[in-house]
Structure formats: C-alpha cells, structure tokens
Length: 293
Image (cartoon, rainbow, N blue to C red; front, side, top):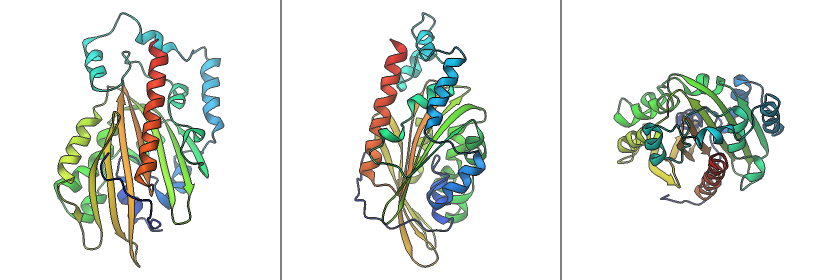
C-alpha cells in the first residue's frame, strides 16, 4: 500500500458530515459516533459469544464445517470456477458458505492488533439491504455532478448487488484519547460470483487524479492494495461547524467464490489497517486450505 501516514489525527466531527462521506465508502456506513444507534436499528447486537453460537447451530443441524471442502475437492469443477480461482483466492465450489462458516473466517476480537472497547455481531441481510444496498447522493450533493462523486455514490450498491443471499458483520470500536477507531469486517454471500476489482478500478480511475473539493470539504483518494485485497484510502478534511477536521478512512475487499469479504475502517492509522488486512488475508487462506484438503 502507498501513502502510509502517522496516527496523529483529531476526532471525527460529532455531526453527520464525516459519517455520511465515509459511509458511502464500501461499508463504513456506521462510522464514528453514528455507529451505535444504526447498529441497533439493523438488529440486536450480539457479543463475541455469537460466533460460537453460530458454530454450534451448524453442528446441531448436521452441517460439518468441512462440507464446503468436500464439494470443492470433488471432480465437478467448471471452467467458470477455474477463471474465478485465477482472479482471487476463491474456492473451486460456488456453494454458499453458512453463517457459522463465515463467522469462522472473519477476524475475532482476540485476533485484532488492539483490544476493542466494544464489539457487535450482525447476521442476516438487514445491514446490507438497509444500509448499503441503495445508491446514495451524498457525494454529488456535497461536490456536484462529477464522475468521481457519481462513482462514489454508486459504490455500495455496485458491490452489494441486487440480490444478496446472506451475510455476517463484525463491528469493533476502539477508544483512543483523541478519536474513536471504527472497524467493520464482513462477508456477504451473493447469487453470482462478485467482481469487486472492476468496481475499484472504476472508482480509482475517476477519483485518484485530483481530489474532490467543495466549499468547505475536500476528499483525497489513493488506491489501496495489500495481498489480494483492493480498495481505497480516503483522506478527508471536513468542516464540522467550528473547525476543519481531518479524517482517514479505508475500505478494501477480496472476492471469494460467491462471497465478498470487506474490511473497512474510520479514524484508524494506515499501519494498523494494513496489519488488520494482512491478518484477515492469512485467516482466509487458512480456511481455504482447510476446506480444500
């Protein structure tokens, strides 16, 4: 990844301005101070024990954790499967994972490079359909009808697609002296294999040449790449009514069969986000190795 920066940043504004702008970046929808109320609207938050509950539900239903591996190792792969495998660390099988399997893939609190102060688990589609599924007009309202603003307003709807199947979201908050770091790690199952790289290509081409500049606010964009994850880094200067506030945001995804795995953060320094993406990539590779043995 390019453009690593120091962690010296002020807190995000208390109003909706920075939250709205960050929210259109591939799932930092519940950013900064808006996260708690929106998470409750999306469904009752669950603590870390919900992961083990999901796994026990799978076992009780007679769904062994390596079912996906049995399918993937079978002789029935298609040419489409082979093409997908060349583009991303995707399983040969295009069967959807179960929610417990997804929870097994996503980073847990103990696997993060910091100790979170709060953690919620959301399952189902409420978060994706209600918070991410529709195109927004946040950027065009703020910066006018340009190619970059339009691409940013479409990014969530393009990634989620029209018919998501199931998903799991892990939300973490980390309180620091000068800011609150927000982290979202989620996986969404889709009807068809995603192609998130094409979405990032379109946004990167439209936005990285020059920053968005409004009357008071500005957003600079940089492409993000780490392992097979691709996405965006946003450096925003937002007026909160009293002063200018600098906010750093990240979103990066990887395609995995019929699934999209996303890591997004707000108010987090680049080194910490890099470390999280690397740990998530390693954990996904471990899971993929287990199910294909």
